Length: 399
Image 1 (cartoon, helix red, strand yellow):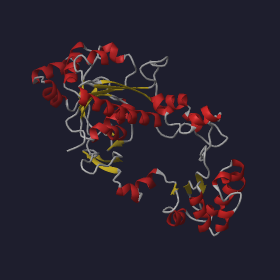
Image 2 (cartoon, one colour):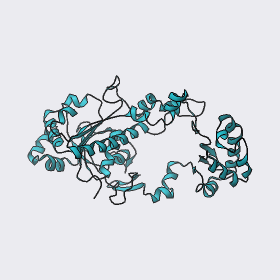
Image 3 (tube, helix red, strand yellow):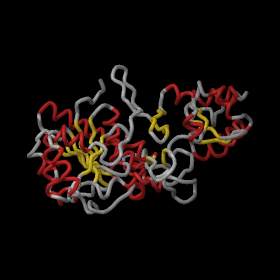
Image 4 (cartoon, rainbow, N blue to C red):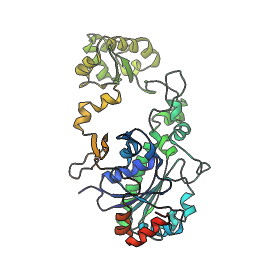
């Protein structure tokens, strides 16, 4: 069995934040039904690169975020489609959507309407700014939340301009918070029979990723700014050049700092009145004048492999790898974090679900669906439509 076997999830999401959320449910065994407009399916289906050559190849980004899902088509702007959708809601446990607030109201399919059909329904809405507030109806992408949350202002080279975080961190954070919120609400629904709406915003999710920045400002009046590889509160906690690459070293406490001093043949520094103890070694002026130059010289005298072999088991030190190197890393391989899925057009390596279960493991090797691939299966088995009715709905452009 899988952890979420027998759950039915209606997936009205597109792009990344929503599909990343529903990916967790799909990999964990839920029946996730991705509902796409037949005339306007999920636009990341067109993202490159593709699996296999030609215009008919499956989008690799789409495949990673939509594996193990069923796909049906339904034009929710049509009254007949809305009736079919209501029948689906009656038999679902969870609905997840990432429209702008107001879209589901336009269809008459908002939470207040749907909970009368299924009181136990957990309705999760992912949006840029949330279901209330002055920005609620603004369009938003990941970078909007990075900008407004303050996260963007914290990232970049020291004393240089702020730089966007180099991944879709706001999308991913919102998706993960939606998973947590949905599962928490599901637990309540299963215990009481009462569902609820779960409201997750990219802005909120990203603000919660700003680390020390909020208490540093509210309690200390310190306004965060780009620090490059450095940490705002402790040092050393940054990257250093090696003879042939870069490593991260986070040995700010006395134990780790003293171990590095001993390895490089200067154990007496552990007793130095200025840098032997964290309280003074961590002072920005002392660190810049005495500690960082010493560490920089030490690390530059060794190769990355030498440092990893000698120190990584004793102190927080890690080589800074590119994606190709990360995928080949033995720890990543042992953790089975890269899975291979075979499509008719070719195979795809993508990340696995980063949660390991001892008894009910997830499955991250499934295929992503073609548009409407499962219309017949879902509408016959879940809704009970006949073959004649399905053919008529398709002819009318409703499916």
